[in-house]
Amino acid sequence: MAGLILAEFFVFKQDKPLDVNKNDNYTQEGDSLDTEQMENKLVTDDFSLNLPTGWIKTDAIKGVTAMAINSKENITDPAAKAINFKTYIAVSEDILNGKSLKEYMQIVKDGLRETISNVIFSNENEVVINERPAYAMEANLTQQNVNFKVLMVAVHGEGDDVWVISFNTIAGNWADYENIFSNIANSFTLKK
Image (cartoon, rainbow, N blue to C red; front, side):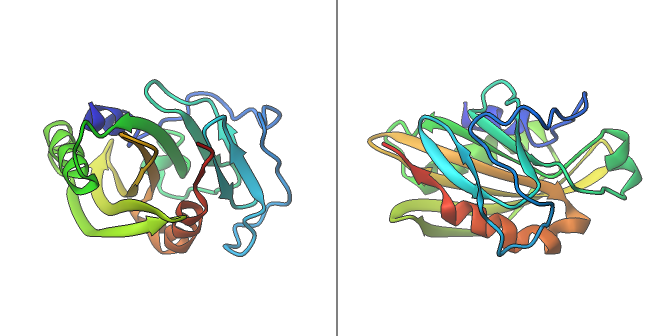
């Protein structure tokens, strides 16, 4: 199930204009992408995380708990513009079924390889997010003629639950987002 959940939102196509007035427990201040300005929060009943200025919560797709998108991003890649892509994060909850985080992420990788034949995984590491064990990995893939770079971080919750944060951007913008994604991931806090 994990791979299918993640595969659903690798390429999130924004079909309609963003509703910047729909904030749902989210405050927006300014319009900078400065990594030091992580004052905005994405808050749900289960978790919270910090977002850079200009990011807004958007409707989550099936299988995803919450999503946020960089509403101020100016995409120049013609193929990405054609699908109205914006850099985004998606958070979903799943169950480990007694597996370790590394084993869980291997299942995710296997599922994605079945769905996206050109996906390449790299930089896999065990990490700690707010005193919780976590596992992070990067992926490169091409869909709809767009080269994407993705960071996935699986954070162990309480008991057997796991929270997967997927950070998605076009490969050409990775250098601009790498530290931002890291800051967002490190701010992830479960309320349980």
